Image (tube, rainbow, N blue to C red; front, side, top):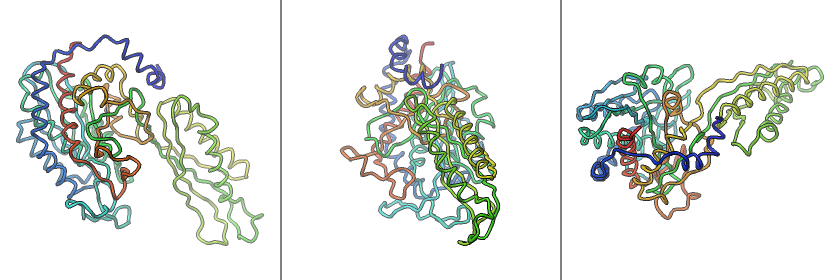
Length: 438
């Protein structure tokens, strides 16, 4: 079935599936909730420390060291240096059973933090040749802290767990420097989903526009694939005073940019799913009165299922090539796949929905959302095992989301009272999945 059809059919699918049967012990879940609450001060302290000492992708040596030391103290089997700076730990339960993975990302962003927090980052670096600050502007510091808390909670109830929990602390979710590899793709390549083989994988992301105490999710395509495209328009240079002697790549590039706008608006069935084609850079020429020989464009492509992704690739190539040819120029089109669709397995999502509703205090606090055109490399884990990725509220109650600073911005802030729900969600998803009767 097409992922789009899955998403549309998810509510019906949930109704038709047999009611999940858990071998869970209500006392175990109550114990997990109690332990998660007891972890709150620790989780906040860890998060503040990471926030004050942020590290960019593939440079998370300090963060990884703190994580590894904590996991070793818990008595887990710990492996460091996975995917460059990643940490993986294994907790073996007291009874045989399946393997579930829980993942958190550790990297920060090249963003200079606005003043205001007592634990604000003052770290500076040079990124792609530009001086800039370093900031946890997307909440990865909280993800790391919450998973450390979940590991401590589950280690205290491991004798009651029928199976194995694998904790994945991942570097470079925001991407690696050009020419380097990292993130979930590299961790998967290095075997993080094997030995032992993972049966299901769960992850959470804090959200600064969702109230604390709430969880949000979407079955099927939840977050978009992300691909990078480049278009080099090759023409013929000339004096700006005699454009008839040129094959003007600037004008041709402008026509291509306008042509690309019709791909989504006229060629993609948007009633099924959203799609995006955005041109982000235009580079060409060095002087105002010289027509250059070539111009280069680059941009991003977003889709929520494989079919739409392939349609976008083909349409970009066709549009750029034919418009260039019509002007007497040529276009060299390159498309670099970056991150697949973050695809929540519908049967798994339906089966774990009662768990989400229980940990959040009722169905009213768990909301199905529309798809997000941002991307997440958690999708690489979901290609190896059924997965569920969801959002945890990090906005103070009663706040208007329109007034809160967005992710990836200098003013990004979180309400730390939302972290306990993240710890409880991760730990309970693992416990309930392991206890589920197949």
